[in-house]
Image (cartoon, rainbow, N blue to C red):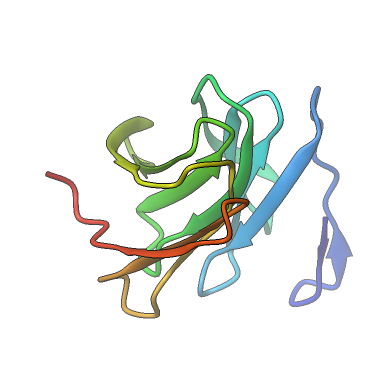
Length: 130
């Protein structure tokens, strides 16, 4: 990974392919979703892994919340998942797509989430945990 703010490259050791990466608003941390269903969060200045958890499915899209405490994933199971990054636990699973969810994003303030899928739909979600 190349980090332009620090003008250096970070090598991330991985056993599987990353399909999606997202950066924090302050560009100090990054998160990646892999084909093995693993989500990893790094401190970009040091390259140190901050957390890792297994979602058990191939993830095609990932987004980091504006406050950096939550993440969204989308994948082959046709769902959008909301993750708490402090605990590594899934907080919510959003269903509605009829095919792979290939992209996810938080709105700038984090009150809404958007997902796009291979079913040719875009969905808007309330990402708050229940």
